[in-house]
Length: 282
Image (tube, rainbow, N blue to C red):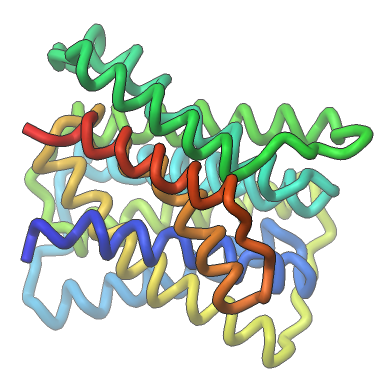
């Protein structure tokens, strides 16, 4: 069962890109994320109580988990949602964030003492090349500067969060750890709302469907699998699977949104798959 976790993660995480635009079209990005992670935290709390896991923990574990959630659910998702909401093309934002495995590989050796082999670097380069082919190079006449900055901040946040999560390796149950991380993300977005934005949410059926998808399938499903993979594998090998997310998203957009899937996309999918295989195989 564990062997299929990466496949399940890729499918669930990729599906989030299909539902991000409907959410942003009906809400302020930070209000939507605060709403999302309030219910994610509540859901993990209920699950922890149901499974009789100890919720109270040490001050150290509490701070570590909240800080991880602040980076991942707060800065990373906030940066991506905000950049798209101000006109940043989704494909370019995704391409910037897809640099994560390269940055993680570069830092994992020094920060985590992981042995990042030449074979893994070959796989990572092929993975990024494949993702680039899928996302394409048509970026339009101009890009919002703040959107570009936000995307790179998101890149740094998800890379730091991945390395941090691997480094702390606390013994909290996943449900309890995920609850505190969701609390950290929710608090971050509430602070942003109080200081900088004029929040709003249009509770349309489209918003509810898209938000339900991101709460249940992405936050409860995909994120839990990601935390499990980071805990049980090397950080550099775990994040290599992120290169398969842009190609998988392209296929989903073709299936569900009638977007065009061309030969270059298929070639990119094949190259990215080969790269991930090389980077993660034993």
